[in-house]
Image (cartoon, rainbow, N blue to C red; front, side, top):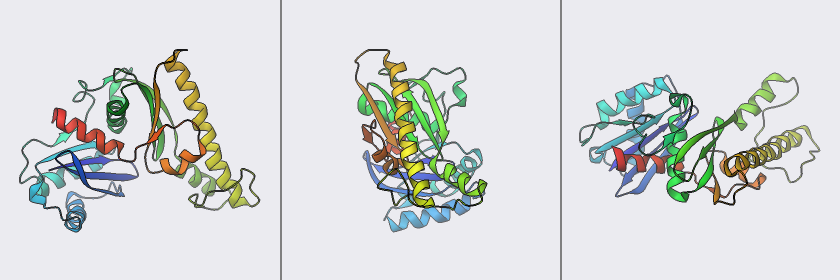
Length: 264
């Protein structure tokens, strides 16, 4: 049984695998002020509720884009979850996973570990040229070839960031909940107009970026091509696009599981 941890800017997503099956997963807010002991208290309670014995954890893999939280997680795991570990805790870095994905960037160290983990998981599923879109704090587009080479991508502000900016930087626009989607593009109230602008607007922008990236990657060929979406807002935005082929909510955890079983 091994623990996979993806530390993101807004949320930390964790999962427990046993015999290659995901037997539990959790999503909590990322707090860069958390200590290792606080994380241990939180996750001990979650494990107990799921009927998971801490002493059965024999492996841990961590992907992180928040250095302070990575340090806290290492402290937590080494102090509280490491009694039965068969291997050292595996921290995902570009160098460590270079045999699984070829990072073709000017500065490979710049790319977030989660983006590479997603690329590995998506390539394993499709093994063709593809775009992996992660709808998180930022929306990232990651381009992966049929040989699992990482070409780069695009980054734009996430939906929550845009809504917060609208509300904080204007006098009359309120904070809104976009989970209640509008039926039409033309809003009859300020709130309806904001919801429509964000959801339909992001959908159109995503379709436009996919169209442009696809053209660059295929260069006129008719090779197989996929668009895979993941992240907390994927299910919300996908209905407003026309170009997403599949949604995989657990894509990052699946990638971590693949990396652990091949490299850890």
